[in-house]
Image (cartoon, rainbow, N blue to C red; front, side, top):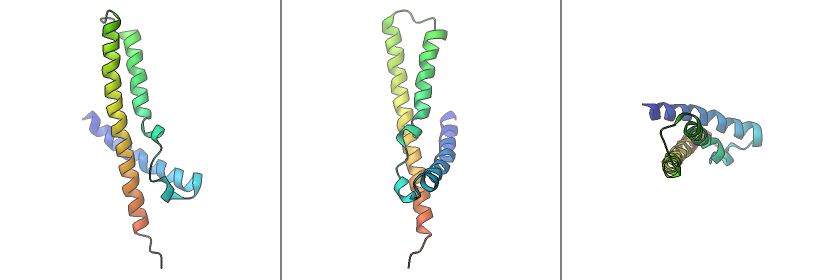
Length: 108
């Protein structure tokens, strides 16, 4: 359920940011099909920083460096999956939005 909310939220964020980058920043929307990678992966960075915060301040049951490295390894794997998912969602929504926008324009 949480992942579905994340998908819907990222769908709603990606289209306005693509419009903002296209119309305000460069005046060429067709060049902005590929969204900014750092914008789409910012959620993953936040989750990884939160997992480090959780490890340092709240997770007292882990004892030893091996357990901490295993926790950080699994957290990094989870963050990479979330980053790839948000980048793909951002790219696909921007691509289909721009495709629909420019398919309605007829040039004679």
